[in-house]
Amino acid sequence: MNGCLIILRSVTYAQRAKRVLERNGISAYVIKPEAHLVGNGCGFAVKVSDVYLAESLDILSGENFGIMKVYVPSENGYRELRV
Image (cartoon, rainbow, N blue to C red; front, side):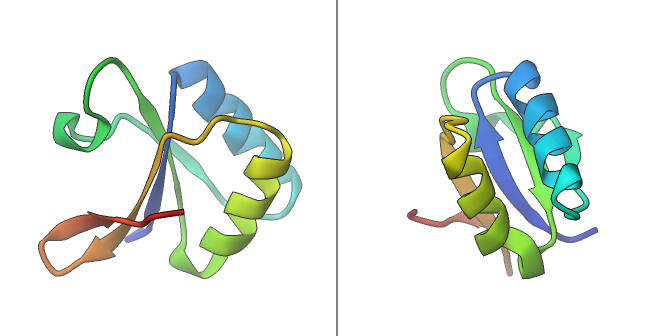
């Protein structure tokens, strides 16, 4: 799946986010993103289809997940989306 990455603080937050999204009908996958995408410290991502990115962000922001960064696919891998 070539999707968008929603970077969260920890694997626990990512797993919780996955469950919340799936309860809302959005397929999501927990992954460990490349180190340069996360920056300092640990961080895990929830990967979702670009079709559901806006809806996913709305759902997660309403649940106070503390999203760190969002990346969308680009020609050279991923680019950060300012949210």
